[in-house]
Length: 315
Length: 315
Image (cartoon, rainbow over all chains, first blue to last red):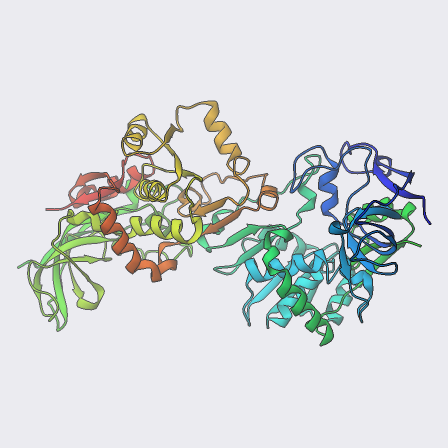
């Protein structure tokens, strides 16, 4: 049995941009299982951009992380020991206990996962929160219609790449912006109509950034999620001077977080499983190994080092 | 019979802000009526902020006004002579032929108006485009729910004052901002919960302006129409640095123009007539007299000289 496990704690709140010094890797004793509890050994941990917002002491989507406690986030693991009727050793579960090699949790805080055709870690990406974020935003805010042009920023990331492909499934022309030629090549290889490397495209970048509002067609929808760069006041914030276009072009700009659309979860699971089965949704992942590299993997997100979903594989 | 009539033409496009020199008052011969045509003598003309956008040579909501042609806008008149089956002398009609004392128009370009309990000029205000703009924006974008707080800028204007009262009818707490104590007093007198004079309230102004996004509750809706100050690049444009809140607070910001919601017209007419009959909607108008004062009335709009709908009364 496992009696202790390593975890990554939030040691201090970032002064400006997060650095490795803000994290601490510690070994923690695991409690003895009580009734209804399960001991889980994590196999995969998710590092997500939204977690950065919770490192600061300000109220964001949800409250900030507590100092001295583990970085909370999605993980997938296997049940090692169970005092709960619903789980047996070997069962696969998703949890939100975050960056820990193992943990003891109440059965109600876990989601059982199938042993299926799809690699289990997809439940942290295309079949998990990032996929659902893309799905909910496109369905509820973007409402793409066949023949429309859809522009996706961060197009090679975990959310953006799924958003691009949902727009293609809906019959749209899709233009994606990503930060490397490799990412753009991949986007083209999965059928995205046009991929722009925003780091090297020169004037076009400038033009696109400046003209995001200018380039919008009448009744355009801006589906706003993430915008992580703006979370800390230490970073420069964009200040568009062309908001008038919101009226002139009848633009809808709407922010959301995936769980705003919780009622779509069932449709998402059905649609995404079918699309994956039909080969209409592709995905990539970028993997770091070992809990000792979780913080580094997380920080790499903000340098755009990931193609698709950034994951940490344990054990 | 009338053989000629005065009209106000667009003499030149404004260099920056419109001035009296951009307009020209001329006497024009009226054509002889053809089949299906009607000669109308205008009784009331509307001057509306949106008309400013059309004075410039840029494409706005709809195309720009033509140089040397009358300023187009809403007007209400009485039929003087008719070659059309649908209209007889004395009938009241609404038109969009703009700033003219009289005109000859096709019957299909006119809307017949009832001789009713409501002063006829209300069809240029509460029962016309401004009222419908308030109604459509609140119904389709704002969707106010009982108990919510609604903030309305330009609250004493033709659109804002109706928006405030629709929000009250929906059971909301309403805070309005207007540019004079007189306007604020009027707002309070018709039941608006809190009225702020944005010209004199000092720090609060600063705070409200800076904090419009900051003050929004989660899932706030920003119903954006007008924003006329931004139409000409000669005027300073606001550049909010806190757009991140769109995501963090899940804000919806949506621009519109009244005719986007044309399908609501029937419901609007029914609801507004009922609300007026029940005494739940009040309105004000500011009236200038004579076509020679139309341009001045129009320019006064941008100084905030009007309480409620700004109108020009003819004859």
